[in-house]
Image (cartoon, rainbow, N blue to C red; front, top):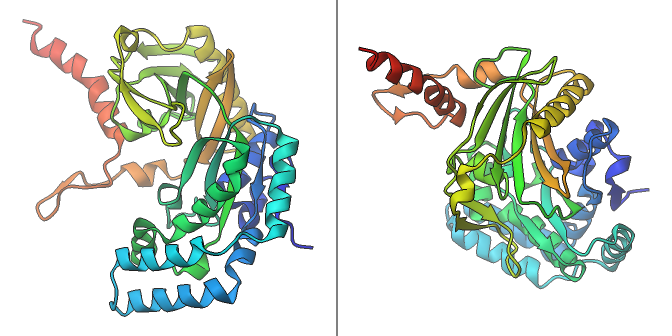
Length: 354
């Protein structure tokens, strides 16, 4: 029998087809006994059930065909599909399953995140195209699930899918509903340093607010280079963080706010760095390959929010930085600038040594 809901604790990495990349990853983290906020997944079967209705399916197919034939543009296609989806009620069977799972979770606030069935494949990066909602109340969950489904047909997603050769039939959108982590400190952790690729060296970064601020490249986080085998800190840099992303009441999207002097203070202690390093090492051993993780601290305890493989580091970062036709390449990632920043002090010392 097709299932509409899975608890995260029931999942592992083999469930991508039903739980999407994000849902399957969180389930695998739970299997590894990582501290993960509890939650459930509304499966891709629920997504397909909603879109199987003739009232939705045929109008969407007609709209996509018109887009492919260049009879309409991306904005018109999105608006037509949105108008079609918004007037269709989510089936009672799905609503009842979600409401029951929400009651079981018993969280006053949750995050609602899209989890595409091909999100972490080598040829796509759907995580950046689909919707996420934070600080959602139980009464809002079903509507946010519908919004996550609809985000597959946003202008950016339609453009991305067309550019990479995907059709809407290739992808389903599961939705992860998790207890909201109310945290003032977040970060990322690489079980292998993403620049040097030394197998026994980790990189852990921390910031005030949400970790998305680090991923955006807009802030300077605290950085810790750690020996994986011993969890010993080899090098640390306290970043001068001037702004942060926060969840504020009444906002389901993060809000940028300026920081005071707190941004120049260490974000986490050396003991916390060593604690997360040990956890990161354990997860590395569980997965059997380098991983990139996102974390947050709530009530003094780490919560792991996501883990992804980073098995293609060499291929990803061994790129041409400049060519005459295109200038700076979009493939140049933040670790390049992290490396440049780590070398700059040594260059300055040498330049002014005499």
